[in-house]
Length: 103
Image 1 (cartoon, rainbow, N blue to C red):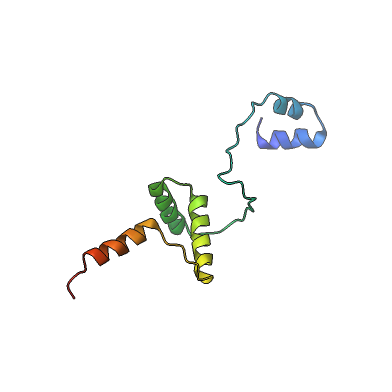
Image 2 (tube, helix red, strand yellow):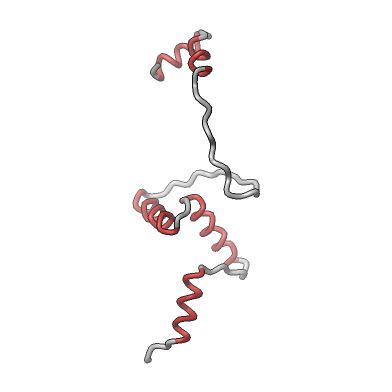
């Protein structure tokens, strides 16, 4: 059944659409990655920006939404002077102290 036919069935009150829904298979929904209540917001990004974010998320083995949430939380922590830094940044800083370059 295509969308147009489904819409007609819905508005006519016919049982065909209800029968189609009854025949559908249960769907497993993903479990949230946190117990904290979440709010969903839509963000419009240029395609190139989204592709860069997705590539970073894929490289880290996390979802795009999780990465964006981490970046927002880090930005807010910076505003509160309770900055969050990535482990990679800490390692680079320590490595640079251990092996200072000639100035």
